Amino acid sequence: MPRGLTLPAHRLPSLPHPLDAFNAAHADEARALLLHCLRSPRWSGRITDHRPYPDLDALLAAADEAAYDLAPGDLTEALAGEALPQLPEGSYSAAHMALSAAHAAYEARFGHAFVIYLGDAHPEEVIDRILEGIRSRLTNDPEDERVVAWDELRRLARERLTRLLQGAGPCSPAAPPRRATSPHAPAHGT
Image 1 (cartoon, rainbow, N blue to C red):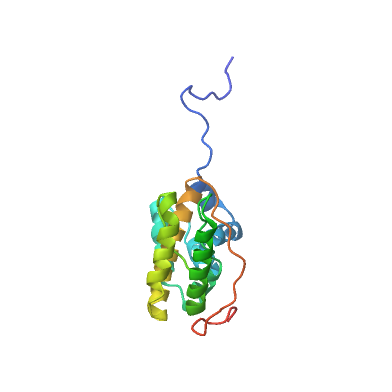
Image 2: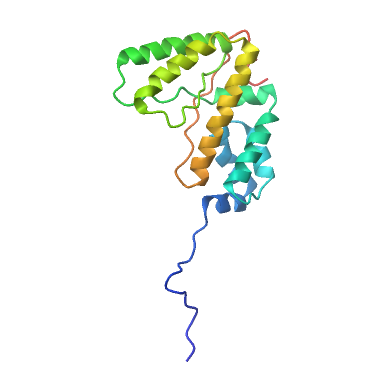
């Protein structure tokens, strides 16, 4: 009597990889997922519209290309969704105060949250790297800083997309909406 379908002992049914699931997802679902990583509907839409991607590198290249095409308003929108990087547990309250003061000065000058890609910085270096970054970038011209912030945002997006599509976890939650706080920044929603 013939038996039903059997699988070889060394093979288990494969579950979809996160990239395969992303490629197969409904467009609205894929856009919403990307919006958590990219904070820009246009950026998320561009990546969603060019699916399927054969591998993560192809998706990251598409994300970079789409980032280069963002209009200033798209960048403003993406930056508005950012928050300061999380400080390591046990950071001194003086460090929190210094970071808050430095960030307030940055936001007053440029009208958006300070963004920095920390990569695999050791937890003890995070505060120093953030403070050093804010202090050095406060001397930038607003247009030059916009370019630097855009590049840092692009690097953050690559890291978030990699984590998401390698199954390492969701993107970090977006910050609460911000209002422009500088005469150099366009008003929100325009």
